[in-house]
Image (cartoon, rainbow, N blue to C red; front, top):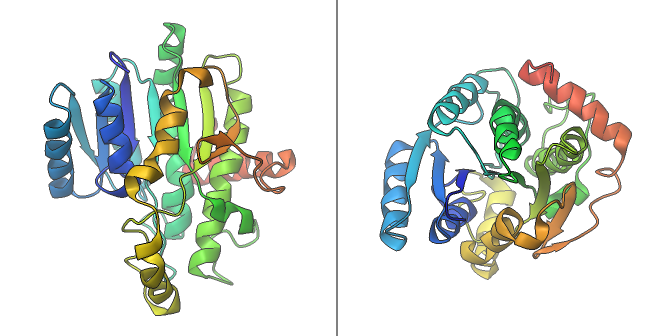
Length: 284
């Protein structure tokens, strides 16, 4: 990965941190994206200590805010003439329905629309990279939770019915649908787009939830896999030479896997593409 530039969202902990660390150890220049400036500084310091030759940059942004995503993308474009890998990893689950500054339910805004808008804002830079032979890759960290997800087009924001896992599963299904729709659109342009399930990982996931869900998650957390193991599939999809040209696939445990039937429905993919672009205020 020497000479390559990578951007990882949600890079201050868990899978995102381990993914950024792995890329740095492979020699890449890595941009870390996170909400908390102190956590970003600590993460950058730790990665530099583990990979002294790596070049690490930090970008603070709340990816549930579309204005902040656009600001972040502008900073990234100004800093990086080329971008070889974008790892959309930032996400969370919330036990209560909240809306963002854009008036969108927070799980959907962060876990799905954050991927969509940041990717589209950086797509031209990745196209330039492809034009110079850089073989850029977009890696969307989804989840096996998408198998239980359903896109409720009549109630995407959960106004009529909200549940933490329902909202999370819907957003993760959105990641897979977005991956397939985008892969078709960039086909032949030298950019690959894939998504993955990292495993059920012992991270800070669900620490901000209460009730029965939060209690249940705290009980099973000690039995989950480590963030380092959870990052292995992200790193594989981002770096494996044998995946050059492989696009529009869902990976689990480092291997291609068939995603849910709803995720493979092209009509649903296209409808969600249109709705998502409308929600982020983009034509394409």
